[in-house]
Image (cartoon, rainbow, N blue to C red; front, side):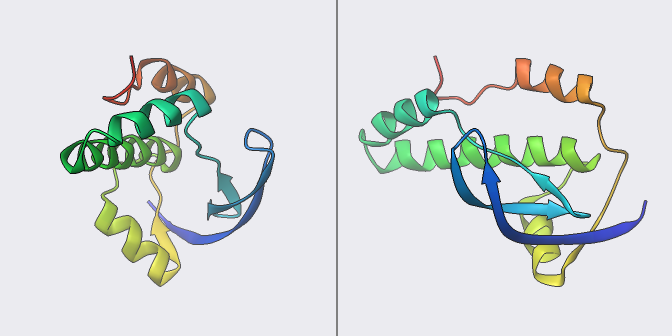
Length: 114
């Protein structure tokens, strides 16, 4: 494994049709968005109370970290990711193939989705 540069900078997302902050790993953007329909469901779910908000937040963090782990080729914790961003570098694993990423997207679910 080797360490590579990690940073947050602006990225134009075709999916969001706007500029967003994105994680860049070794000059490659990690483009992560929650689709609009799922976001609406999550917001409605959060209106049910504070416990629901925490649940949705936890689900989003777990999903994000799972996707990011696939992107860099190894499991990464939130604490480790935040430290890597602060230091400006992260340890890479063996990044997933495009097919592996597609398979993960097909099976990845967030708890508040139907």
